[in-house]
Image (cartoon, rainbow, N blue to C red):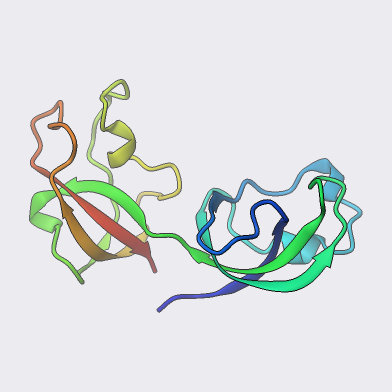
Length: 147
């Protein structure tokens, strides 16, 4: 089930399909009357704009102000163990135990916006990763949707 949230985003980013990671408030947000609408997303999660509205507000952080938009958490492409890569299955995301952060596919195995233990559904299986795992694990690329 897709959970749509209404929030505010800079005018330059307020286009359907734009993806962003929510980093939380800055000190300039403290006294803003719209802070609760802007800051209603989960810090560190990746979102996609799925709808826009015509409501515009001024904002000291965004050149041109902000628009009201509808967002949902974006699908995430991840490399997981092949045996778990079944379309439609629900998994608990746990990245492979690996300390090779200089590996070319490390970020596919350890995306910043997913946390160990997150409950996810495999939306689709995409195939092989662009390179083999440095530890020799059999991996598949999948698109996950956090529940």
